[in-house]
Amino acid sequence: MSISSQIYSTLFRKNYAMLGAVFAASFAFELGFNDGMNKIWDSINRGRQWKDIRHKYVQDAEEEE
Image 1 (cartoon, helix red, strand yellow):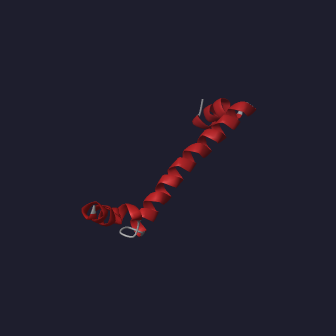
Image 2: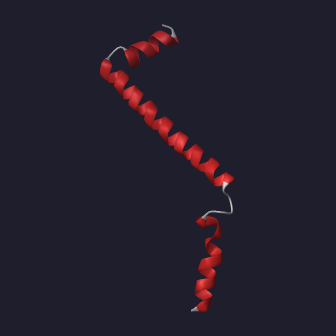
Image 3: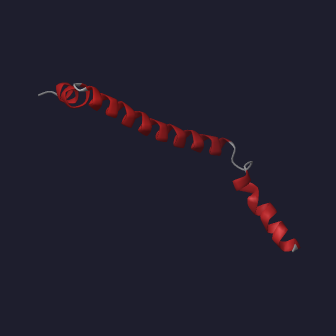
C-alpha cells in the first residue's frame, strides 16, 4: 500500500475524518503563523515597545516614592 493511498484511506475517505484533519491542520497553522508573526513584529520593533522600555519608567516611579 503506497503512502498516498494510506493517507486517502485514513483521512479523506470519510467526511468526518477529512473535516477533523482540516480543522486540526488549520489550528496548527494558525498557532504557528501567529507565533511567527509575533516574533517578526518583536524583532522589527525591538526597543520601542512597552515591554522593552518598561524598566526605565517603573524604576523611576519607585525611586520617587
